[in-house]
Length: 265
Image (cartoon, rainbow, N blue to C red; front, side):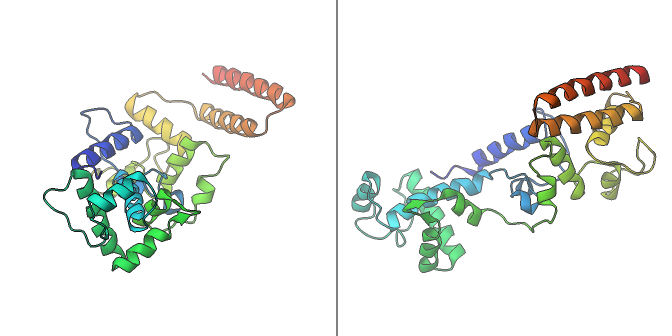
């Protein structure tokens, strides 16, 4: 069935709050729209399923079954008793229809509107069929909102990149990080200087340090930050290219990292 918009908005709200780590009742300014977050990586998003479009794509599967007379008990029963052996494309929403049928017919009308006519809608459904099976993911890609492609997707979302680093880096490239310069450009802040160097800023490690200094008042020495970056990068590399010799190197690097930070402190 086509879920009510209030429920879909509530589900999107829960997903959005989880992504941005927003607690219940907490207000926060979102620098990136939820639709932009749900688009694929090559369009600057996070490859999250947009629930409203996914719900419609799932219903398109049932429309395809009825339009193509796919052999199943459900389709045969509805063809006889609901459609009266007529076509799904000519049926209009009636007052006596169940909620599930209202949802199917609503999506059918949206599909015809998007394709231009019934013939175009039929071709659209058939384009999502592979070896006799309807691919919901392909239909979802047709129905979802589209955004311009970005050139840096393969660099940011590389297999050797740490996911949280990629997340922050992608936001920085799109000017969606809540940095002082971005917030001031929207007229929210009047002061525009970095709390780290009083000039400019970098990405993930510096972004974390910036948050610690603003929200906790605790500052780390720049050499500790540098060692932290080197340690994280070495761990990530060894995760993909691990052997016995690397294990000993990893332990040695960890000891050097802890000793150096103790000496600096």
